[in-house]
Image 1 (cartoon, rainbow over the protein chains, first blue to last red):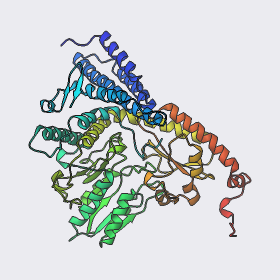
Image 2 (tube, rainbow over the protein chains, first blue to last red):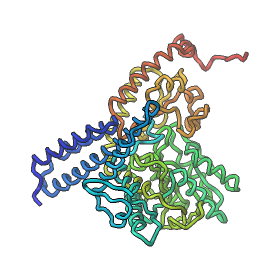
Image 3 (tube, rainbow over the protein chains, first blue to last red):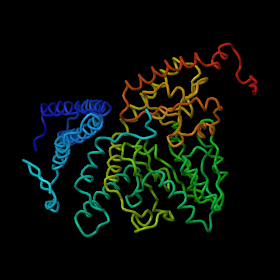
Image 4 (cartoon, chains in turn orange, purple):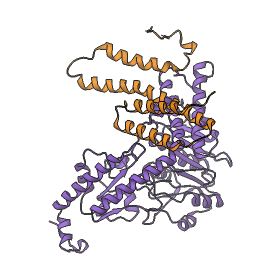
Length: 130
Length: 397
């Protein structure tokens, strides 16, 4: 496997910072941005290509963690938002269902276990539950 | 700023837990299908993660519902198992409520307990510990980092003393695990309590480390299906233990970075408060101290009034489990703090997610409100006039 180039590392860095800024929680957002900056800064002089690739792979995994969080946090925010507004009007059922399903879809990154096939069917284009 | 009470979930921990809350919901003790096998694999992975944080073997980790349950198992379990030959236990006066309460309930069963006093620094006197050990002592229990004043006990030395006198050594490491390096073999620890929600893990889970070589025998508190080697029956909550494992792994990776950062923030908080406000005392030894737990006493002002004034900062004036009572903290009383200073103490907690801005804001508001409250305080007025408060005879009406 060719080692990651400087440009690829910088792209990854920018992507991670961009995703981190989407955390709605102040403490998670500031931590993620700070930690990413400090980690990349700390490792900027690493020369060994194997070590670089290990670090890049870890960073890619962490980027996926952050991306998945956006869905879960969006559901949490939506729940809180609707709970606060519940005195005004009932929440449209579509919205809640959509957020929940988008959370379930994002967890499809792991293999779909065959034994679950008879309960829910996840597919790229749509979700049907029965 | 109350991380000793609880900590937020680290996003990496939530990420590890979610699959087990959504799709992989099997009971880890189900032996006959893939749901069970997957859950069991996850549980064992988590066990390995917890074990590697403290230098233990995975077979020595038992999952529980939290450090309180772990403390109960350690103290009551060991005491009751060896009750035929050994009837004495030793602990300190600054332990967590669950340890003290377990000891009290054992006293009602006929055991004898020595509650060691602590010095002004909050640290126990090792010579007193050695003198207190009797031929029929089964267990010594001393917490690693105190949850109210952040003092670190000399665990390695205590471990050495206990191992040489053939007494089991238990430590409640709920506030220490994942924050300072711990090794159960180097420190000769026989039992250790771990709490999930103090290390950015989920609430409702913890673990107990029970040494296998030489084997520590424990009488189980909870009867049932024999899960967790018979020491803690009940279905192991897979999502929670996966969270605990992930929290331990993250803590291991982040320990150095977090410690450096928290030390810097703590230094900033203490320096800025002390240079702007006179008559502020830090409780507990400043050297053998975990930086993230700072307990300050502000003379001439009631702690509760400062807490109410700082209403947009989450702080506490003692541990969460005793925050409802009006009594001053027994930990502060044990280190010899005067009654009035004990009432004026606030605990500041700094954690992984605390920002510099939050610390600066807290310091600024603290100084502002302290000055205002001291203006209103008749005691402060008298001190300014040079009156020695201890010489006053307060009359009864």
